[in-house]
Amino acid sequence: MDFTLLVFSSFSELFHPVTLIYVISGFLIGTIFAAIPGLTATLALALLLPLTYSLDITTALMACASIYMAGMCGGSITATTINIPGAPSAMMTALEGYPMQQRGQGAQALGHASLASMIGGGIGALLLIVLAPFVAQASLLVQTAGKFSLIAFALIVIVIAQRGRIVKAAMAACLGLMLATIGLDSMVPMARFTFGTEALTAGIDLMPVIIGTFAISELLIQARAVGEHNRLRREVLQTPAIRRRDFVPPLSSIREIGIWCYLKSSLIGYMVGTLPGAGGSMGSFLAYAEAVRTSREPERFGKGNPQGIAAAESANNAVCGGALVPMLTFGIPGDPITAIVLGVLVINGIQPGPQLMADQAGLIAPMLASLLFSAIVLIPLTLFLIGPYFIRIVSIRKDMLYGAIALLAVVGSYVATYSVYQMGLTLALGVLAYYLRKHDYPVVTLLLGFILAPNLEEFLRRSLALSHGDPSIFFTNMDSLFFIALTVIFVYFLAIKRPVKYNQQNRSTSGTSK
Image (cartoon, rainbow, N blue to C red; front, side):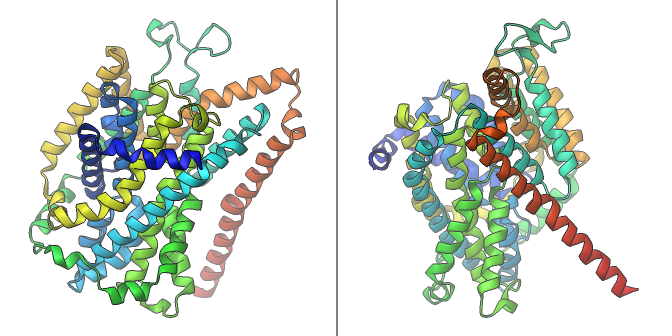
């Protein structure tokens, strides 16, 4: 209760002019990046990460929270108007939003998406504010061996969540783990894997990894799609203007959707968000599937049904609150954006974990207040004020946009470390990530592997030191055994049962066709 009151009292910091400017600017930047196909809020955070060095840590975290919320709701703009999701979490929104756009109801679809985003984001943030202290208290019961099993569980779930490319995801994660071992050993004063290069003694900084894998590689990927960008620009310029009053969804339509749909989808999104590696895409898919399953008229879905938009957008914005739970209480990012937010904390000397809510609640409370403020105030306000210009975002010339992004990425990587060598590493890692993505390797597992590796190694070695080298400690401690059993359950249901069922269906289908 004390933490909840602290969060609501932190709303006073939002009224500080400088802080409010940063929060609103972050929200607008997140919206723009999420609305442009190919650019994401993750890229926006990666580019702005160096700026956090010059900001107060509280202001930086509040801006990050607003970018996060904007990134989830912004993807619905192009998903609805041109059937191209600006963010992966908006894929299900495109199924219903674009048919409404074709019927001349595109603005109404965006209004439904904004309302659902506001409700889902608000519920997710409130659940985070209320439940995070209890989760933090429960996490104190996890001992050293249990912490290793928990991080291993998170890494394995992140890998198997990459459906259809689990082997490639595992290889990318291993590459991230290997990169994290370069430099001084954390427990023994000895340099490892530096290959005689003195500049690598301090290891690879987090900043080059984030900027290289997300910003530089994204620029190289997008540079190959100039023709597609030109086609989109021509299509957007031909789209008729939208009036502000068109965004207000009819009350009859909201009643038809029902408050239970919003609440249920928000809870699904929040629970999915607490799972490492799940993200908004899985949350919106599960909520959409549940809406179809429980609907009295499932045949209406896929043809422009506002209920599908409400379910998907409520869920993917509620994911924001859920994904911050494991990041704040265990230091385990739930998705790529929270991985970068974790980087902001680590860079500023704040170590997430069970004690964070107790020892540094004054830093975390304003961030959660900003998350709630972005959901219930900035989402509807932004739609009303600049909604008619949303679709024009896509018409920005890509040569100018990507040139500016490239400059920000390179300069930002240098300013973060003031090291030309680390800047060179940024470019090298960007090229590496580009080739990984080109061959369908998920670079997000590389980044999460790099971030989780130090704690994974530390708790492994400490556990073995406590047991004098006996690995049975991981099976005799109840907290560790719990996470091992949880890992087995997730591997069975996500990596074994579904693929087997899918293969059986494929065989039966091919047999029927013969």
